[in-house]
Image 1 (tube, rainbow, N blue to C red):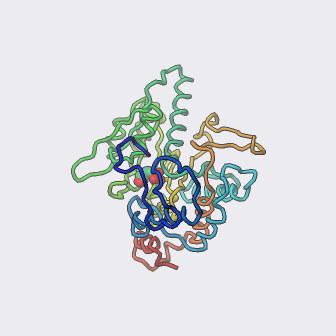
Image 2 (image 1 turned 90 degrees about the vertical axis):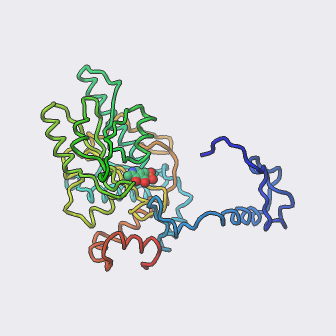
Image 3 (image 1 turned 180 degrees about the vertical axis):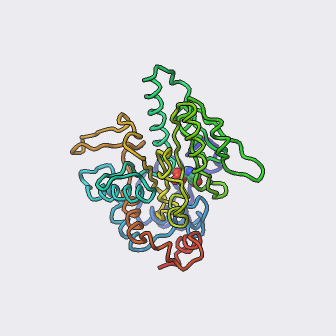
Length: 359
Ligand SMILES: Cc1ncc(COP(=O)(O)O)c(C=O)c1O
């Protein structure tokens, strides 16, 4: 994002490209003339040397190394616009397979021939916006049918939520009711969260893998307490699980842990493909429990690229490479890799993997 500030120099001085560029380049205006491609490359490449080294960057838990075979697949699809599903039906099919594989990993209650409801996104933030919108619309529809007001929706979360929840609340006009953290307890207390639920609560959001310390919130306890509260009040407040980090960890190393669609109130889950889904930045997923949990009116049907295409995303065009890379990782690693890996924990495995030691 560019925010207004004063800069000390209006030019870019590219010493090493001086054979091609005899005058400095304007920093914020398009240069008057074109320059040779070699010069453009050298100027930008030289300037980028001042960035950090992604392979040494474990901040934000985003994948920074992938196998060369996958790099090759990504490069060969870098010019495919994902939204053009008629032109790239195989890419669409790979996305749909990813949605179904992830839904099954999260124990979605699918019949044998039933396909899952979900979509690939740019990351967990977009996934959370979509999940939040589905909850808001579902709550509004129910309230309207009961002749009740719909002007004051809220979400209950822990104060440890990632900024995307605050963004969702502000952008889509939903009050964020945060359970305060306390000394020595840095995740949402399910009992306090359920206490804060009222008739205007569109969902309670639990986190599997808090951004601050990686800790899993107790989604099972949250579910059980909320089932009780729903019984007493007649409401049907649902749960969303923000599994941005934990969604690709828990199914492998804590398969017995009940945090996903095994719990009846969990209606949607997001996960970042670019975190422990082991794909470069730019991919997330949101999966819904059932089709009823994603109100039909949020799905747009476009036909001007060919046949009818249902879409539910915030943006239209996006790259295809990350979707293809996610499919690569899912079939390349399979479920058993984490069970048979020689490392003491999945975390070690992922660290080794991300810095490129596993070949
Ligand atoms: C718990 C949690 N939710 C959501 C996000 C946002 O994820 P993304 O960067 O994929 O948009 C993060 C990112 O760190 C996170 O830790």
